[in-house]
Amino acid sequence: LNFLKLDIALLRKKGMDEEAYKMILQGKKIACEYELSLTALHFIQQEIEIINTFKNSINYKFKQIEKCLVQAGKIISTYREDMHLHGKRLQTILLENCDSQYMPMAHQKKLTAIVNEKGIKIKEYKFSSGSQICYNDILASYMYFVKGDYYRASEFYRKNIEVLNNNSKIRENYILNIYPAIHNYCTVCMKARRYKEVENYISMLEKEPFKFLPKSRRTLFTDCNILSFKNSIKLQLFMIKGEYASANKTDLEIKKIISTSSGLIVPQIYFELLYYVTIYLYGAGQTSRSFAYLKKIIESPETNSNNDVRLFALLFRAIIYSESGSNDKMKFAFNDIISFIDNHPTKLKEYYLKVATLICKE
Image (cartoon, rainbow, N blue to C red; front, side, top):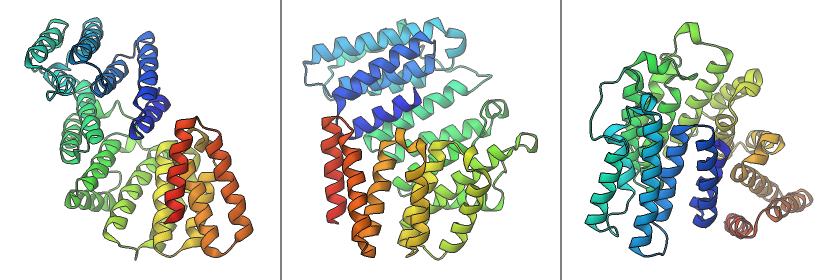
């Protein structure tokens, strides 16, 4: 389901909503079958967003959204014990996606009534566990991120950090504790140009990288993933500010992380780190070091399930060969790109060809 979510995000980014819609319905069906209530609600959330893009009548959209909310209500009613914390925030998130610009007020009122009737009460609960509140904040952040409202997205991620920070019991449920939340917050803050907040977290993580993780829970797995998070955030900020003086130091630190524990780093975190260090070292004029990290992306079997990362790596390799004057290697690299693109459906093929052409022109 996580890979399905990534594919849906990719398709939606490319405007391929029809294909994304089919995958959302598939994901929702699987999540409901296995009683993954929070995941099912995530897919319903996305389903509502896509319904708003349909070129159908307002009444059709209303009926479709009504079905989604009724289904969401059933899920919440069925798992009331686990879901009692969703309350007001989830209602707000779902209803905010019923686009008020096109949805008549009478319809919106009826949708609100359906949500209330089906189990999402307009009421704040005292909570012993904030895991659902955390989920709501992440859901809201993602919604605003997709809409390009990075400031509001960062605010919800900040609330997510606050809930985690103030409740040790919740943090114990997460293998990597509060760190993924910090990483997400910093990433969105950079898009919102809130650089000061990012600098504060980087400074804190440089001094005490494992501050939020009790010693009893520290392992090689947690340490290498936390250090990977820290370096990904740092590299993004360095590139935004054009600071390349720390290239040697950063390269040594990342080499150490990868050489001692690359197999333990979560693939998504690992490829994000490789992606940023490749670009950063290339920008610092250290092409050979950049190429070494690039090879790690290309040679990893994990990239077969991450199309965007693989395409980036293949294109970047061709550019490096082109700049070095290695014509034979460049032809070989472009054949790899063509082969990669040919193995995808027509619409994705068109998109990848367009991306490849634009990058090569530049």
